[in-house]
Length: 97
Image (cartoon, rainbow, N blue to C red):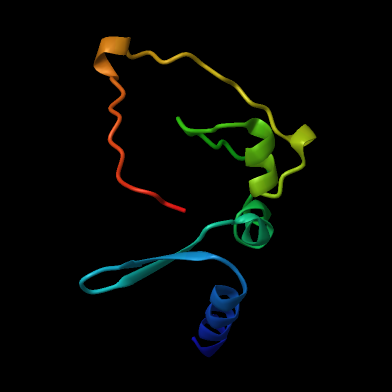
């Protein structure tokens, strides 16, 4: 347990993390996961399927997950939902800079 706490304290101060307080627990998530991907993800298998409706760029995804770009296959498929069932709502919330 001590080594996990030491690791956590080192990492939180060295990198950017998001903190989500809860009623009975707290959640800390790294903003950038590339430094953890090899140790926590890729060593546990030979092939992976990553699926998301929000991948902006295959190059950026490969970089952010520390995967060589030539080792990924990106498939872009159209939405199966009709446009009237997936409206976009513009709701500005404030300056986030």
